Length: 84
Ligand SMILES: [Zn+2]
Image 1 (cartoon, rainbow, N blue to C red):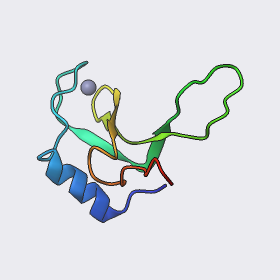
Image 2: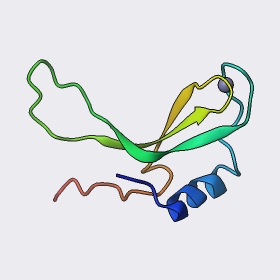
Image 3: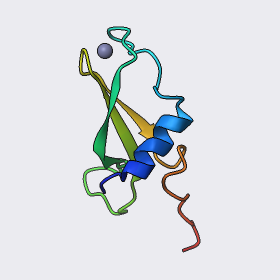
Image 4: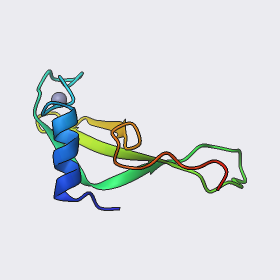
């Protein structure tokens, strides 16, 4: 899923412009990757449940380290209803 400009602005606003210092090089210049990503749990060699956790990815403009933040935690995606 592609992030809209409004969603990217919401993320920047929540993080006050930056997710902080890069742990590798110390830079604070991060670039938001346009697509939302998903982290899938491992259920064993034959996965049976199609669940995933949505993520927003940033990469450092200097050393290219990638960090992932929860799109649910950032308020971009609603918490899934477990009863649905
Ligand atoms: Zn860096």
